[in-house]
Image (cartoon, rainbow over all chains, first blue to last red; front, side, top):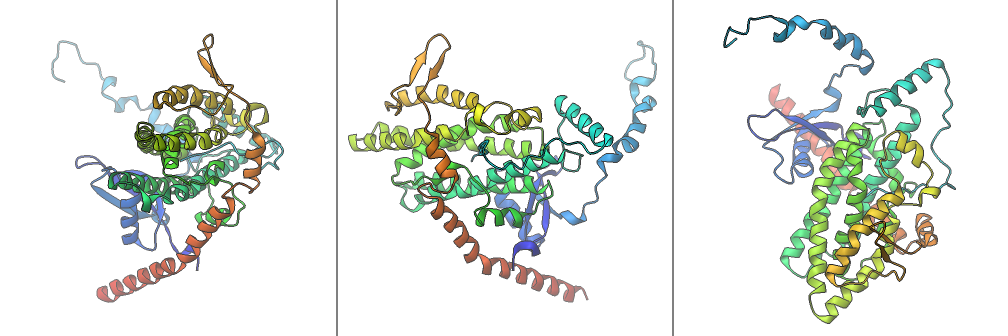
Length: 95
Length: 337
């Protein structure tokens, strides 16, 4: 048997409470529990985290970089979504 | 621990000729180069030239193999470290090297190559790893010399890689560089203890420096005029400085450190050039380097055999882990059903 039976897990670490989990890399493990154990040894040797997520890489749906323009460009011309679009006299405070 | 320019010009190269098949390809290549020139990072699913991908797979996997094989010369001394303090430091360092190998394999896998394929290339002897790990570690002072010189050279080479154009590689290098500085400091501290110790200890430190100095300079790879892919890798911003420039920086940083230890660099031609502010040093014996790359170094066979044995001896663990995972899944299903 070789290791092809060990699926790839993407590892996310929460550096401390109050911050979101952040992607740090990936590893292979026989199952999710082993992925968590290995992630602890590989990615948190110096107090880098307080919580780990291990997500099977096959479960992640990702947007296609070639569709970047059609997905994200439409937001560029919607300046009215930003507060600076609206004119308020300087005398009006706290708005 | 380390990546190295291992590709001499004579070697059959994996780099394709820049033959553009279609106009669309040319446009993609152009846009890619513009992004790289603008210091934009390239991420795994972005379009990239095939040569860029292959170069990265080769470099990142060689780097990963170097970390893994690099555990062996130092692991040799874990059980014989002279104090508990030195032992925990060495254990932590060797564990770090294993971790660095894993970060790097993980980065290589984002380029569409499998972990088993990469490990297979190392075990079959097809893949290369840094020449430095084919030297033996006969004395305890070698552990100090490796930390000080080998990790020192590695840092010099790896810090610019934190700005590499390929995102996953650059991110792995940031983590690695952060961890590497402890490695170099523990090595220098160890050398300092020996250099300030008894006459025998000082002799041992000098002997280690004598054996590791030239191999450390070779870690930067062939001279610029002999280096196969320098120009292209610079244009792709995989590489930021030439081999010779990095080697020179290492010499400039390290010679004063040797002086502080009261040790002598084994190079009669070494001298400080007051005009340039840099050290001039003697010619490197590339025959030795080339022999090691061909597999004829003092420990090439031993290192690969050790890796093969570890892989074979670990087979039952890999099987048991899969069986255990299957059993756990069954149990969970039964409980749910």
